[in-house]
Amino acid sequence: MTKSEVKLLGAWPSPFVMRARIALNIKSVSYEFLEETFQPKSQLLLDSNPVYKKVPVLINQDKPICESLIIVQYVDDVWSSGPSILPSEPYDRAIARFWATYLDDKWYPTLRSVRGAKGEDERKKLIKEVGEGLTLLEDALNKISRGKDFFGGDQIGYLDIAFGCFLGWLRVTESLTGVKLLDQVKTPCLAKWAERFCAHGAVKDVMPQTEKLVEFAKMLMAKMAASTPN
Amino acid sequence: MGSEDVKLFNFHASPFGQRVIWALKLKGVDYECIEEDIFNKSNLLLELNPVHKKVPVLVHRNKPIAESLVILEYIDETWKQYPLMPQNPYQRAHARFWANFAEQKLLVAARIARLSSGEEQGKAVNEAREAMEKIEEEIKGKKFFGGDKIGYLDIVIGWISYWIPVWEEVASMKILDPLKFPAINAWITNFLSHPTINDTLPQRDKMVVYYHSRRKEVSPS
Image (cartoon, rainbow over all chains, first blue to last red; front, side):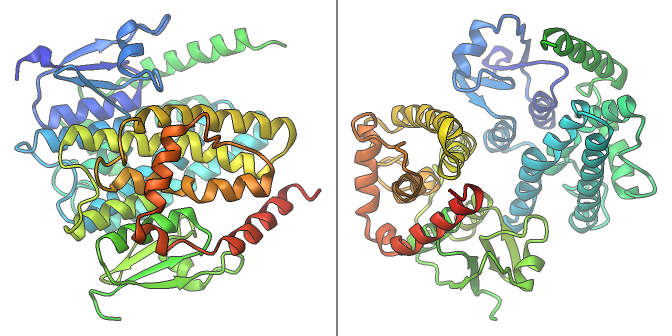
């Protein structure tokens, strides 16, 4: 498959875009990365994702695929000769999908809302919820990894990708609030897993540096404050 | 319980549990249904689904699986007869995309509409209708979302055929206008006339009572 047949429309700060990139890296797929302009949204984005107008969008032989976890499963399906991303057993796949859904529906929205919390009480409450979620995930890691390095076992898999992409923004939140969320004492396995994940060959080149993300977050917050009427 | 036994923890009015029932029935998988009182959840349910404490939960080979969309894919991967997901990877991605869309955009709005009133309800009804418009485009020219046969996406969206009319009655609102959504209405007719789909539907009057009580909790007027 020639390089231009596979394109990924994305944005460097997006954890969701990172999921798609990691999946493509695992399969050693050559692809063209197109950094989305956003202001205004590019015609390619509007044409290829008319429903949500969001990144990531994978374009394979001119066919668009949207929604990061759907893209990851699609990549696993299409490039089936490469290392598997989803586990092979239906039950293990169900557990991986369950936790990925939890992360997207519950945990990450809570993490995001920490930055926009109104007042210290609300911030504390949300931080506590993030911590409770991490305790659940520590438990899940212990059960699922069966003593190995990743949720996927010896190699990173679907749930590693689904969760690991949020580590950058987790660190941003720690930096902005001054609160340690991923605690080596409370969640020792997750803390070690996070280091291994970030150092992995398929991840390290697409994981943005925390400092750059913090700068980006501050810029976004300033923009929001400027546009919010008093 | 034999290790191959299948148990479904459900609540009669749950549209999420209904998906699981449809999938199991279409595949001819025997299962035991355990009705949960969601106002007084059993300790067993809380053990089986400690994260969300909700139905449905499928238990197979003594292992619990929660979240209806996750359960559907598990069922399809475990019992190969009557495949629900398309074979082609792009079509699978397409089906998952629209399943996700219906959950995020239609179901959420329709739920708010059935619980609210006034301006809030009006806004939710509009959002539900907008989502419905996109789904109308998807089903145009097809008997089922799955093509000639009922498939994954039909089962995921199937709740609208039976739950939306109940919610409309309970909350005095209209989302599924047959004039605005002729293709969806034609699909609903096809879907509900399938004996497996129809034979397993919960009792409507019990559903109406349940949803009335939910609405009263939120807006006592």
